[in-house]
Image (cartoon, rainbow, N blue to C red; front, side):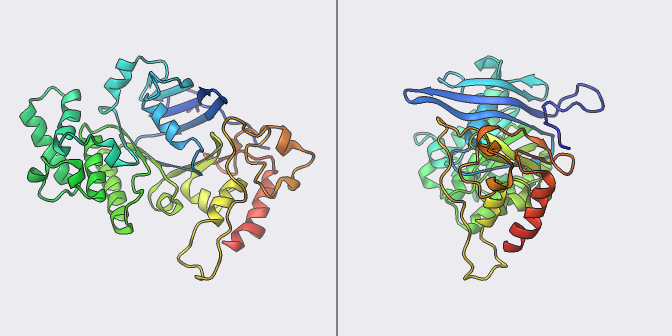
Length: 356
């Protein structure tokens, strides 16, 4: 019998926390049309040295979660509740100044679109130097030297001369490398990468991901990788969190999420993923319908309007009862689904896995 999960997880009967701990996080936006529940009751943990992949369709709450961790909703109309603990410090209840001190020094972010994230009126090098000056007591000369060193480290050729170039003078891959240099110049212990390879060609994508992994190994930092690309997750991450409708519907070690997933939404993501070992004529199986409106989230299971397996549950529980996030077959694997565990595993073995 499964039991509902709660966070934080206590280790050995003590009260020690994970390096990053998110507990019952809710980020709601009041609008004229109603309350947008972008994140609704999200909990997870991440230790130093781990890479967590957060996957899900657009609008599932991935980027909103990352901005909440960075404290970037402060000063907006967002209603943020719950707890976010970073190395023993709570972020949701902290002041803007306290979070600003952590941002850059203890946590950094690689944004989805480096062209819009870099200021067009300042040189790339000056922006990286400024990030270093804000958090360290060094001279401008030393900050410039460190910025050039970081540009070299992330693979920018001829870094001393490129220091004075503007963002529009960099290619897409080079801008992304510059963003990584800016995010890592203060050696943060938590790095969040939001779709870091979007709009890049496959060769540059591979280089960027390899660079993130190398820097992660060197700094032993915790990394959150937000992506739509399940292939990137399989290659890069230690753990996976699957989000849908602002909620976690499944999470666990990367091998289990790919080889023994239990949530119908996860099955849908895997079935819609192209495979190199598949016949070229084989058609992908898309998830029917569209993601739910976050103003009118379905009652019951948030995935029930698109799930092809609601008939496997007695009564009308999928549409009327919200499922808990419960312990899966192994420690660390959790799933939010009304289908009994043994039946989910049988469906995977006999109906889903053979079709992949």
